[in-house]
Image (cartoon, rainbow, N blue to C red; front, top):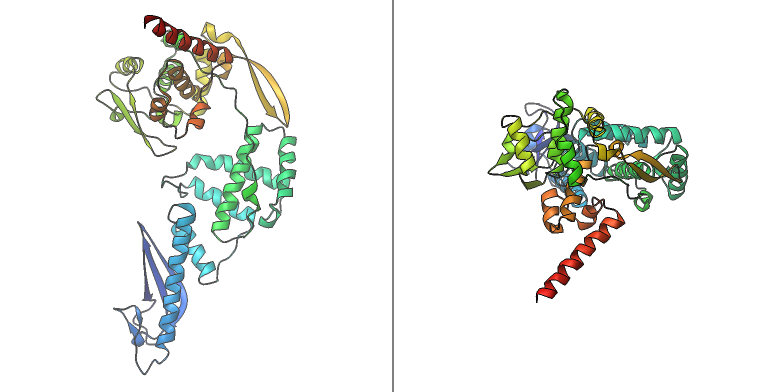
Length: 416
């Protein structure tokens, strides 16, 4: 990064203020530093006060500028070391005002949370990898903030203690929220508290010990047989259902998230492979084009079916799956809601959603014996533990898979 000092009014005949111009990466920030000097004592080449008998205080003046420059650089590097990403100009300015110039206006917790949501919605928040935090996640942050306001409309940073955590968990359970929903609320609270800590609004680190409660979600996957039944449905009388079915099948045979398979285009397909940057992680994945996907592309004359909103997609998808006989079986869904274990009985078609496609791909590939590492590379999973959460098979299916492996091994031994 570069830090230079400039005169606010270079042509002034009297003292004028100084600006610090800070440039780094593709960003630039200019900020007043509360120092002033007569332009006749300023050296535009060195960006410092000239050494002259008529301005004997130049050594001390330049030393103050050097300290400000060092302070600005420290703010930048400390933030980068803590977050693995450069600060936005807005964040860097707030750090400089507080830590270097001692002028920062500190926001209350709820005001900072509001600002955090606005930054998210505007696409101004950056991930650790340099990608943009999905603006649509601002809606979930707003829901989480509303819960906090209902709990305590005057909540501030120092109130966020371990006792607060225990009491707030009871409050959220009292609202009948599912355990994973509560976990997401705690995750968002920690994200906002951490951002406020980095920005210098507080020094309360109690939130770092808060655990995010969670449980394995009992979600379904679709077998190859069920996928074939969906594929062979006659939906010509309802073009909207037809497109949703085809788009869902593309998800089931690529392992992509809805945010990716809904924007898949011919530009992503070349020489029998799909290459696309995942919206969530910004990582590229390469996927072979399955024969079913080839058929769908041919059906749309070399293109892919148009996408619709996620809400409408899930609504239509359930109507499509409702037509499949094998999906009319009962499924039990266990989860913790309001602190209580609950069991809900649903038809399997009712449990299918856009994200079922990704679980279906991972589970079917696992059952078919595709090496786990290979599936992970194609699906974009970073860790085996994260990948295994997508494997939605019953204990009996696990036993059948083991039996197949035993039979294969024994047959090889008999041949030898």
